[in-house]
Amino acid sequence: MKLRRLHPEPGELSAEEASSGLRLGELAPHDRPYLVLNMVETLDGRIAIDGRSGSIGNEADRELFHGLRTQGDAVMAGAGTVRTERYGRMIKNDELRARRERDGLAPDALAIVVSGRLNLPADLPLLQDPDSHVLVLTASDGEAPEVPARVDILRGDPAPDAGVVLAPLLKRVREQYDVRSIVCEGGPALNHGLLSEGLVDELWLALSPKLAAGEPLTVVTGHALRPPADFDLLWVLESEGHLFMRYAARSPQPAD
Ligand SMILES: NC(=O)c1ccc[n+]([C@@H]2O[C@H](COP(=O)([O-])OP(=O)(O)OC[C@H]3O[C@@H](n4cnc5c(N)ncnc54)[C@H](OP(=O)(O)O)[C@@H]3O)[C@@H](O)[C@H]2O)c1
Image (cartoon, rainbow, N blue to C red; front, top):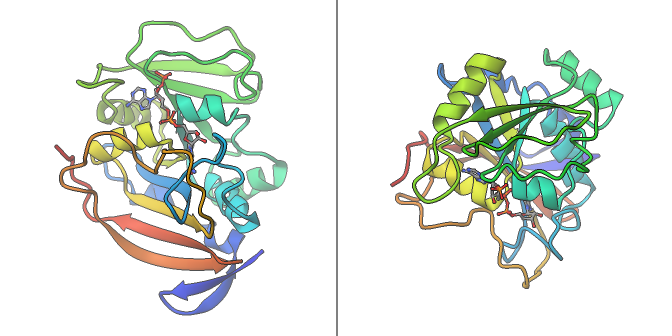
């Protein structure tokens, strides 16, 4: 799958070229993993159609989505997204696992799930996969279900409004699991927590040429981020009218 590069310099590259050799771990600050947020939205900012995101993107989006998963020591998502999208094994096939190994990463990514209530259905394909290693970040003192996947729990402090304070947990993820890079796939509640704590280093945002209305969900939900998170544009790629923007966070600072 070829994409046109519109910015910075015009050119052509494959989805694999755009999502390989990123060496994200080398960009990590000393005390936490480098974190890339990856989202797709419609022209009217909707991130789900009929409750799911799959029909928003095109083939290039899917290739970039799975390509970016090859670049993180861990792939992270909020429990709402994991439940709704019925997450399974993060790295889907041997070819993608081989790509990870070529880039110096373990063949499978650690799956990190953030859950306030520690409410994970045992029949989730991710939990039913014996090859998956799942790390749950939570403030709950509950237990994970008995499942074929290996499930570890890291407990943190409750956040003032809801959920768990993320920064100290990500520090422990780095220290205890040697995770230097995380690809985070949302959703909007988790994104708010990460942005409020200044934990997002990059945003990969795909813009699909559709107007969807209906679902109120946008890339970030929650109270206003003050100051808003600012980003610098690194590149714009295009395929079939879908735009793929890569942004770097401008010195991520915790918001109020
Ligand atoms: N277009 C896209 O790129 C994209 C990407 C992702 C998701 N989505 C869509 O977004 C929708 C899901 O939205 P959502 O708001 O439910 O997503 P979410 O942020 O994945 O899930 C919210 C849940 O995650 C947990 N959580 C998030 N932040 C937390 C924190 N700081 N501390 C503790 N727990 C935390 C809580 O889990 P518990 O409920 O277990 O306490 C919370 O209820 C779906 O329709 C999905 O398709 C779209």
